[in-house]
Length: 115
Image 1 (tube, rainbow, N blue to C red):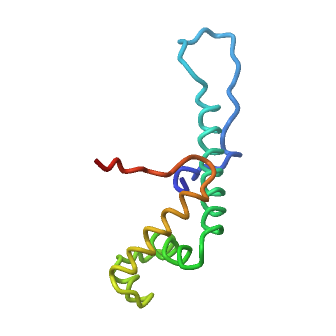
Image 2: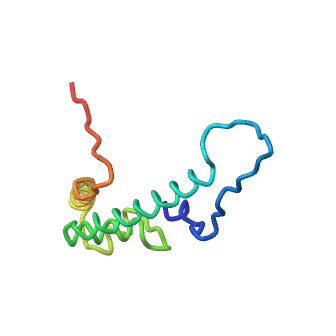
């Protein structure tokens, strides 16, 4: 969403009204662009709020995975945090669950149907 919100809202021009007939198409592109921009900003705001409401270890894992330029792999984060594989994946899974619980814009939970 950060990339999606790349256009400043002040760069969007108001639609011009003309008495010349035009082809009728559904929707207002300027309105859709404004909506998409505002939605992208809201996603970013809610993402930051959700991360802030996670435990410290969850914040650390999510930040290292998604908010660094290096984009480290899991084994690199395991090494940085001094966790063995099982423990790291336990905390990584918990971080995702905490984030999903705290993200208020939409439900991010995915339930696995076990039979």
